[in-house]
Length: 333
Ligand code: ASP
Image (cartoon, rainbow, N blue to C red; front, side, top):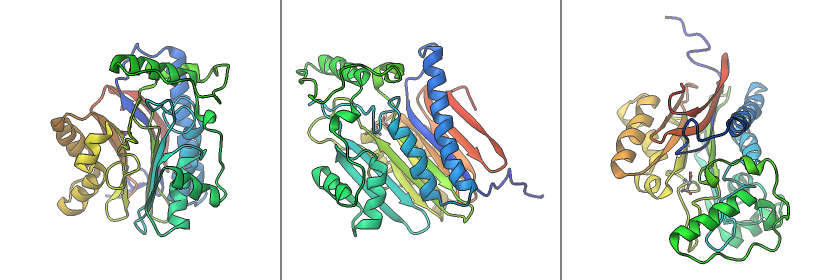
């Protein structure tokens, strides 16, 4: 049998923008169109890098920049608030060619947490930096810093107020630097902003894979809570021997299962196809543990896979010789 580029694309990329209770009829047509357009734009941005021979790491970073800047997603601008009314951002990135990995947790002033995560690889001998130190590190390398009010969106603030009321917790004062007028785009955020972690996986024409994930974390999180997104092996993993994976969902479950690494281990040691591996971990293991969420993955052969046990996941995929596909609900391919 001959293999066309469709069987084994030379480059491939998938992106997610969060998984959760995303049901047909819940989103207004304007909201749905906004999410679809944003996912398409992010996938195209990464595809442009890959098409021109750029690296999987560069493609992942370029796609995630768009998603971090878009208030629709719970990452960068538009991040969910902590119970104290702050935005504490987590991100990680991993290079499947070298197993180099970088992560930041709880950054509050770095505009692009995914770039801070990448800088950890290139500018330090560490894998993970946290809190003020991570921002100071990013600042020292010249990464763009913003006032914490940059991340504020009215819609996420309202989600926080509702979330805290449900938990019986006090509502903190509005951040002093919050903008006065709500932005029209941020008003399109779905479901009072519960979802929206973003992630991208890519395979470049040189045969290397990479994965990255960026999030504001769980709504109304407290005590410096950190989810799976910045944890290498849980929310993000990449190895040229197995593939690249980015996760979204209830982080505590993804950490317990080491979801991203577990998928790669099933491919590497049990010989499962990538699709079987993502389905096994998400549909069987994650579901059995009571966790909800989804994953995207790309294999070293450029094959793409995704799986989620929620009613929807914002997602897009594109590969050499294949058209861009964008999905929101479960019943789409
Ligand atoms: N996984 C993220 C976290 O637990 C949240 C999400 O993906 O919705 O922080």
